[in-house]
Image (tube, rainbow, N blue to C red; front, side, top):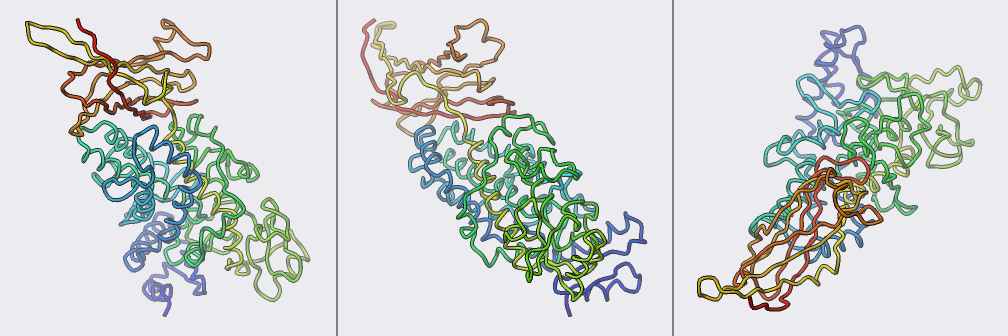
Length: 527
């Protein structure tokens, strides 16, 4: 007996449910029941499904997530490697050894573990209503809000939101011991993998059309058998980076725009085809799910308006598929939206495009899932890569090569004994377009591996009119520290960290930018 038949038998005495047992296991509620009761029954049903089928609410299988993340890393590997090594001093870059593995391995691992436990209930965002699942009993907040949870709010030490990633990153740059820094590097990269997972889920229509798919998700199952690599040969779809320079549409944080820019209102699907659109808007407006085909009954979001059946166009005869014109011509495999079934279906469609009675006659099959994957997988990879690009953005413009700084030894007498002290002065610019306001720190590494704070200062745009400004609007800003000569080696590492609000464009509430370099002994002054 199929699972839906079991539930039908379980609930039939109260006639709370009626079920269509089919290959796609459609499951519907009695529309005569009050909405709240239907929602509660639905939640209980989903809860049982979660207990019986813990993978039922996943958008993609774990191996698919790992492939998506691996490809996202690959698209920007050269730039990211260079940034990690040259800006942050992480020797080995993506293959550096930190606690738990390498940055590459940890991001891939994070994109896998984000589905652990009940976290997946927070992986949904319906962009028209701007909400997550919000199920009675089970809960579930929007994927946007989940991704931007405050530090530690997801699950204490197992919190891996964007803000947790920022916190781990700051500690990776500033913690006193190397062991601590390696631990926080590991957490930083794992958190980035888990955040990328949320955007990947947002490229699955079921997760943006309020379809919890408790029994099955055809696209999920199809991609479990396929390779991500087979769908990116035509290129990766990268979102317009200017989206991240604008105040968020659903939340103030610019990062939220990757999910939803609030441009698609449920009646204007054509706007979702651009590069400056949230990924949930694109996936919602252009693809059916097994449980959200118009007119075929569902316990899930029946109010979603697009695609509509009437806008579909039949593929050339003898193909049984209907296509969506805005995704391509009727002969283009990537535009397939649904399959017509039943002996009279094609005839009905050809006789009158405006008088359709296709109840039970549309379905999704592997050819349709292939079409969806052609459109969605390149976006899942590109939007994941945008997470890394935005997180590790920003350079600190130094006045000379990062390894060309010197510390000067001053020898002087204080009360008789010879005393030596070194002075390190790092000059850099604060570009106007970075819109940075916050704290700047200078750290010094001792031979023991201990990282100590040499100095800190604060910058606010309020000061700009009172300081010398370069023609491009940049401000020169120095950090200076005095170091006892016997505490440092002949050459030692220094690290500058910016922490505060920053752009470019709209300010992220907490940006972290790091720059490291080597300083060497220069000269001795006898004073």
